[in-house]
Length: 514
Ligand code: SAH
Ligand code: SF4
Ligand code: F3S
Image (tube, rainbow, N blue to C red):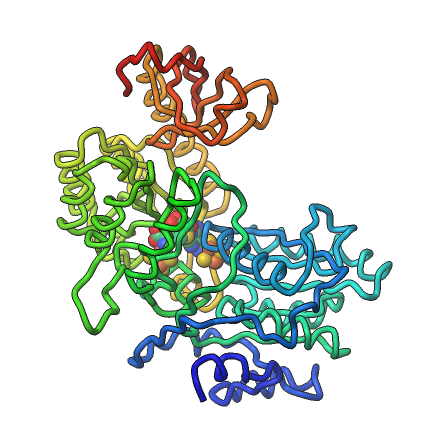
């Protein structure tokens, strides 16, 4: 059997042999036991080598399945999910489905979910509630739940019990199986459940329909092995698996040839790129050096874990060019005690040293971050250390969160003596600081000329165009629609807390750009 036959031949209704527990739990719902998730299995990290499948094709027997049918995908969560949605859209189109922007018009609705915090999950349950009437009105409609929530037993159980309007649930490792899952859902009266808890192999050549033609995402690795004590991602996305550099470079080259202006290299922990290669020593620095040579104006990467950010990468970033000098570097906390129980495996001092090194070597480097407040038993003093670290680094923006316990993670078992009001109050204080430093950073651009990659009309005002600078600052400005998709120079006339306002300037004026 070759790889292709092996992939296509897998049955939807397979029992995961290592998953006896879920067989027992789920048998009351199904005559046939489907593959169900297990966080316990998802935690395991095997030694076996990752297999690369380079000859993926949509199974021929399912092509045409979507004739006369429309699909709608709602995406929650991070860029990884956004990009998975592009792959699923590619699969739908390959099967003959057409896209639609409205749920009422759709024959298949997928919710591509995020499990990172409780409120992310609640949004999905709310949406499932809203969709119930559509299912009643249209018995041929298929509703599916995929993404990170599908990897959690408790979520799957809740859907089975309460949200019977759902026709299919499939996991993050089962995306390439979408044709088989759809087919099975049309054939079966029961809910189709296919969630592999053990990560799949790396599958190249999956079809993709990208959301725009200006910026594109490129996966460089999948999964995460860091197991920060609060985080569900290592369970929902499996072990770290890097794509081969030649496949990534080829994809970026193709995107450059198609006229894309900006690429974001994606991974949960991109700095661990290549650590799983058994046959060579090749890391993110090497990959960035190769991509630096490709003729595409901007390259970003996300998300960086401070621990694996090595000197080789800094040395490559120092070359500038298409490698932008904006680095998103999640710190989570400024307190060594909290960092320790989070298992981030760096100290405040090490983080500051890394920032100093990057600032030294990469001219004009700016930083943004992620922060969690109200970790179990976080003291006022520890929280203040986060505030002081934020100021010391001079972060220009941050995603800030109240800690949310995730079932199955070590932190969820910790006793917590911090009341919710205190957590909320800390978040407000942190956000005030985030706003203050963002406004300060924006002010520095007042009257300056910036380079903007124009993405389209501004959200709030169709007479205005909007785009981002290399350092990811949003700029709204007056200019011709012909500028969309191009990098233009804009003179900043006004600096707000979260955006800049300006006017496009003539190329021939050739002013200095900051
Ligand atoms: N891989 C990325 C993070 C992905 S999740 C990294 O390590 O940088 C994005 C952010 O969500 C995290 O950086 C963290 O700040 C936040 N987050 C993750 N789990 C959380 C939880 N249980 N409660 C609150 N915030 C959380
Ligand atoms: Fe989660 Fe930590 Fe992995 Fe980021 S590095 S995805 S926070 S476990
Ligand atoms: Fe959410 Fe999964 Fe991304 S939990 S943040 S969608 S990896």
